[in-house]
Image 1: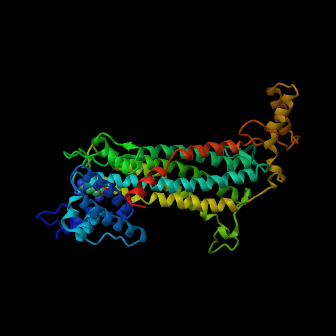
Image 2 (image 1 turned 120 degrees about the vertical axis):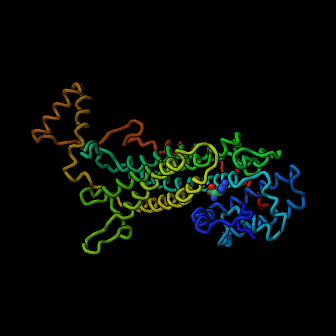
Image 3 (image 1 turned 135 degrees about the vertical axis):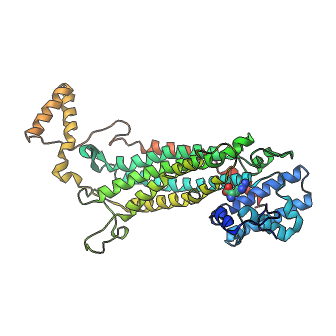
Length: 446
Ligand code: ARG
């Protein structure tokens, strides 16, 4: 029996087959459950337009649900010699149900099949990702509240500049994640459209009911134009990876801060000993390897949109096999960013904060502006007060008052964490993951 869906009377060269299949068997394992859900929706629609009988639909649906269960228990595999997940599922159906299994592909191509698989995969992994972002967001807000009164220096040009606080530092990254979540939500909206029915990229002469598969799979709407639906391959992954890259950029900056603040020359934070690693030669070392690897992993994730851009950049419209390669770094990117977020969450919830930074006289000058403002308050024009304080510093006669009195929104004395949290929760509520859960439960009869 031919091992490929498309094999007729010529057997493909073994090396060519190895080369073209590449890592697809491994990558398609990420897509297996979604491929099956897509097929259940597709055959339900085929029955409604008379291309399958009621009996065929119920037999095929029962088998597909069986195969779905195998993906849950870890017993689904793509066999040696089988090209991809689409071929594997069809093969399993024909083994169990004979010719009936061969009917499911009417009005469909692997091109719209892999498109729909990717979109269902993306929706579900974005849900996992929002949960991870939510966890670290809440830790950041909690730490910001907890250390709201602990002053630390703020830097510009990496020169001691003005008073900042741990309340501000933790809270800044929380608010950054709120913006990153907005981008992720936009990516979710773009992914949440149904490409099924576009077939090879030009539709089908069968009267497919695309509204029906859109509803059955819990999509917001369809990608209407079949040519555009196919153009969504690569574009969707690029946009989603841009959203992942945005989160990675935030965490990478945080990781750099953490490495720097943990160094003896700053000493602002201290990682628990069990969270540091040692040196094979220097017995005193307690290195922040976790944050260094976090930084590198985040930087690597930020290369993903560029990689996808390069793979898709010079392609005209229509399907090309080039697109297959996007799966290799894109599909595992979700596991990567989620594990980063969870690790950094653990680090941040246990980090020790130095509450005596100001005892070190080298930070006295960051209060210079406070003194200028105090004089300006007394009626001295700002520019004159600036000069007066500047000259006192030059003469070594500046003794700062180290109390800070900021009250405006977003400042040391008024972090607005409750408002940041309300904003974050509102963005989170826009995703509406329940819609697809309800749809999947129906497809699986759960
Ligand atoms: N493995 C292929 C991919 O990921 C599936 C689609 C194959 N389509 C084709 N026309 N060869 O793109």
